[in-house]
Amino acid sequence: MAVHSPQIYLDHAATTPMVQPAIDALTAQILKTGNASSLHSTGRSVRKELEEARESIAKAAGCAAIDVIFTGTGTEANNLAIKGLFWLAAKAGKKVIITSTFEHHAVMDPIKWLQDHEGATVIEIPVSKTGSLDLTTLQKVVDQHRAQIAFISIMHSNNEIGTLQPIEQVVKIAGDIPVHTDAVQSFGKVDFNFNQLGLTAATISAHKVGGPLGVAALILKKGVNIEPVLHGGGQERDIRSGTFNAPGIIAFAAAASNAIAQMNDRDTKIRKLKSLLITKVLAAVPDAWVNGQSENSLPGVVNITFPGTDSEGLLLLLDMEGIACSTGSACSAGVHRPSHVLLAIGLSEDETTSSLRFSLGDSNTEAEIEKLALVIASVVEKSRSAANKKVFK
Ligand SMILES: Cc1ncc(COP(=O)(O)O)c(C=O)c1O
Image (tube, rainbow, N blue to C red; front, side):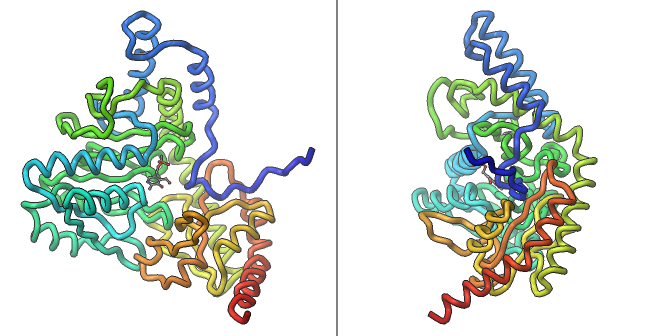
């Protein structure tokens, strides 16, 4: 049997390996029986642990335990927030949704769905070349449409280029308009405090912070009683029905507490690796450039354009060298579409399909970055000549 050496994993924004406290919590819990909604002592014992997990996640996110609504994925939590807030506001005749041009598809697509099926008017606020929301335009749009706005949804940090967004100012401009933020990439990696920011809703997801797949949460201010998307047993304030994924939730809490406890140390270590990666890769490929700004950004995410290449080809060539990264752009049904995020910050279509996202995590080392630096020039060269061949055929 072939033994594969482990890959150099530079794709932590896609998903992170589970951390040991989460593995321990998950394996211990999965062996137990009991539905956390059952009244007998077996059920009550699971419920107790689940409520402790809710408390831990609330503490990590800066909200009250009652605000935490567990879901299956971040995508589900975004859909729930967006559709729920819209349906609530639409009852009062408010049907305008304000968002940005570079949200994750899990925000963009439910908003588009509301536009196509429920009569929502969508206004997308542009972002700057460095990947930051244009607050002047936001202010103008809010002033102009205030009475009709259902909610504002702006991501806390961008998943492709890593830039942090000015959510505090967004909330100030919003005043009493509800604000939702997709904090899937930020939670556990940079400061995030739901109450301090004054948010109405936020999305977080376990598998981006060393927790298991299949568990996430919508943080929704108590008293904001949105319409559910799923109807059933009435769990989670009647907003998200379905039997609790107790092992997943308890492991999520373990991962979240671990992430918060280690955030500062990890931040220093990963930012140092990121800056090494940028220096080495740009030295090896002098006409490459970094997209977005690297200061006000997530510690581990860096997006680089290698002009004249094809990002899928680059990704596969790096994969053959034992290095995993991401094109950052949406691939559906085998079609390589230009990234809407890179288009939003002003790249041409050609440039968006010549870009790679590297995302660093806890396990990465300087030696791994050195290995990337060693192979990147030849990989880029190969991709360039392949791309040229296509052009001259
Ligand atoms: C910014 C952002 N939002 C939402 C999601 C979706 O989260 P999940 O994978 O838990 O559905 C992702 C996942 O890549 C993301 O990066």
